[in-house]
Length: 257
Image 1 (cartoon, rainbow, N blue to C red):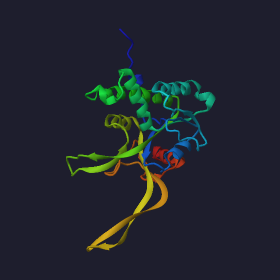
Image 2 (cartoon, rainbow, N blue to C red):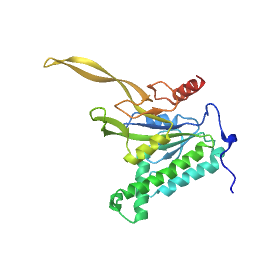
Image 3 (cartoon, rainbow, N blue to C red):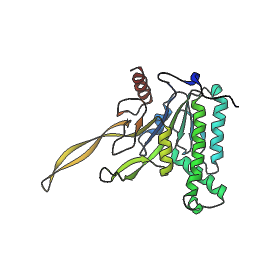
Image 4 (cartoon, rainbow, N blue to C red):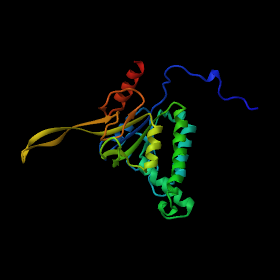
């Protein structure tokens, strides 16, 4: 009989303060990459080629010749050399560009030109297995004490809510199966945008007309709203500035409470 893996000694008590797993998503140009690069001792998996203006170390993984296997190899290199490199944070920029690498890997394995050719959604299920492998690799780095920041673009999806009328919401620009897995995996899903306010600009046909204006401040939401997906496993305020130090400080404050 094999030795039991679970016993009374397995029980833990109180809060377990572990490294952060955050997904930050939003429209182009809001400052997601800059936010990621302000994290402590970062190394990024640069899948877009957007790191050239950032003062941070990265793996250049954006060339079309780079495969999903190359991406996972970069995680193995980090795992073996994180102390020598002084790495405290691992970033991925971005998830939607990673998805294209995964789809290409699935197509090569199945010997097809398009993931749709596999039929009946089987290609997307195959891709999902690779996503689990990738997230598991990130968890191995987290177990060594590294924070994880994943960047994604946003898309508008339709929400069919049986308790209300259908409405549109900003969500991760990923396949719907992957969106769910990534959101569940992450401790924080943060929607980044420019701070906006509406003001009354006049009236038309007897009705008030409102226009939107921005302060130019970059913020991120940590609590879900009908307009966007968000989550936080720590009770921090929402919104907060799109600033890594502020984010970490809010988490530290909340954990003391």
